[in-house]
Length: 76
Image (cartoon, rainbow, N blue to C red; front, side, top):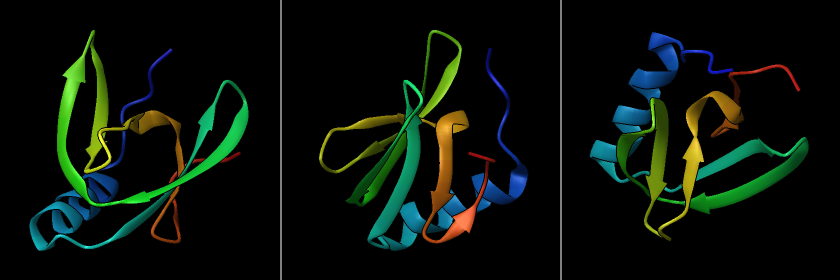
């Protein structure tokens, strides 16, 4: 099930993308917490789910993000 992200999180992603801020993303992947670092290059919708795409080409589903640059966006 997909849970839409908050406007605050969306704004934070846009600022990071526009200003090319190196970012740290902690997210859930099959129940396991993972961490990636990189620049947010774009956001896209794939099969009805929103993703951020890092400069490393990794795609992270936005509703799975727990922390973005130290700010909590989802309970673990």
